[in-house]
Image 1 (spheres, rainbow, N blue to C red):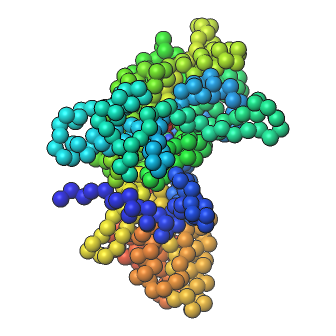
Image 2 (cartoon, helix red, strand yellow):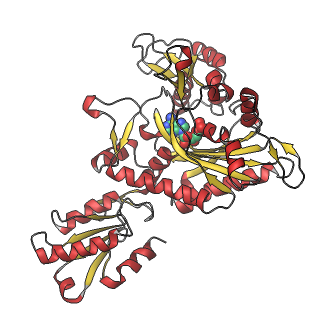
Image 3 (spheres, rainbow, N blue to C red):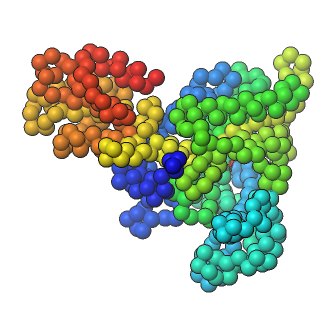
Length: 470
Ligand code: GAP
């Protein structure tokens, strides 16, 4: 039997039990679609972010990074089209008043039909339906809410979060929490051109929080109100560069990052091209890199050819030039852009899901994370916590390694239990300081995946960790 993915409940339970993710404000009963990252989660997130930044920004001469505001001038969102059309189709359960996404209810209805053996809708693409067509589909097929109640007609529900600036009293106070990090890049395009040495083709990336008033609940950190995006806008001259080639290069870089850098199994990834109806009107081509989550194949990372839509829109709405002047030909034009947009929370959930392993033979749960992503690279144990000479020696080992790596300390319970705990949080190596260490400066290192133990010299420990992290 091929191994299936661990259930979402399994991942949620592990994440809570071991301090990766907590439901936010759980003191007050939680808040829908909102989570906090605990001590382990914060480390894992940081590692994913750092890998992305190193791969796509700091090691590429054609890339720069920025860090723009969450609150941008409200005209930004009018120009980008978000105020007008950044919406999901919403329906209300007419009895319970609970809200659902119409497209999701239709998808679930079709899935149930297919499970019962119907082939009528097997190649039906729900994303291709307009809100009006969804209304007709719902009426014709008498689709009900999950509680079995009638539902309202779908209406477009804008996902932007609105807030207000305290210093202004009238309507001018309205401001939006950014719905994507991308717009902060477009609005800084001129600043970046004027302040750096970049020349086309070049990309600008940033990592930061975005906000969407999502209706769907129950997908853990996959879909949250507040989430982190890592987005790139890669600008180029459409007359000089072949967009299809650039697009393919980006797809390859994204795939390689997920498999090689994040260590995800290739069989759990697939590309899905957006149909004409699904694709945003300004995009010439869009692909999603989907991951096989426990609740189905879902978008991890999108890549879209946004043409010159955004810069053009901002030029029109601001009245300022966002043209690029070619230093050789003197030609001025609006660059085109390819946009790879990743959700860090989704990458986090994918990494946990892919690494989760139940080792029946050894009766343990192991997170087989790539060592470079593991929250702790090693755990240091004094064999016995009530022997000061062991504790002191172990403390010295901890201190020297902690200068370079994220290291954890554990002196609680017996060694077997400490191993099981570290396996469950994905620590690649456990280092035990025992009485022999005091005699000959050797320690026991135990490998997370094989559980094999070996004795190595203290002076070789750093080298041992460095080679594991390669
Ligand atoms: N600038 C383009 C853009 O924002 P998107 O497909 O809407 O495109 C990009 O979002 C990525 O952000 C998605 O592929 C997904 O990983 C992540 N994302 C979007 N909405 C999210 C949400 N509500 N919760 C968590 N991640 C989300």
